[in-house]
Image 1: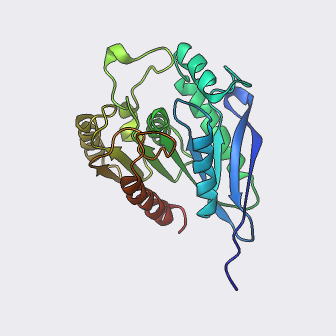
Image 2 (image 1 turned 135 degrees about the horizontal axis):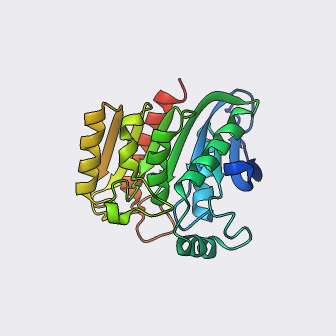
Length: 250
């Protein structure tokens, strides 16, 4: 018989930073078996249709995926673009609050009866930066994927009250495997910044792998944007499935 395929996707609520109840988008496979979890961190444009589609894609590949709405407190009922504008005007999502929300998503996954016990995290753009931060600050993760996270490296004058420490400064605390996906035509992070991040990862002995794609810039997974590069995106998604297959599926 053909293999059964089915998935469930829905809005759920999770306990975020400080016990705040926030909404999240969850997708999971239907059928028997236990599944690893993936925390999906949306880009600055927000908790949008494109990132929900990515969340469902993880379910299709055998993962329970949860994407917390990091802009929920600023704009619980606003459209994603409006919520992002409000969040940006407030200085962006505070790093400590993000970590609390990500921990809440990890706890939510761990309590599901069909969770395998392993959890990864993946983020895009600002979510890539936050993923690097989570890799250094959370002890509930088994693997991390940074997709073109800008401002992992920050000059002192670029630090703010919401973002007081550059994620690169937590590199020595990363104990899980890290995958990086980058476009060579990107400016944030630029190829030079990716090189500098790689130097620090090597220095700290982190288990990492970086993949760089010629002819691709920022957000080249985004099927709804002019930046989409189908050939490079297909190859890079293959690296994601291989990486998580080795570190979460085993």
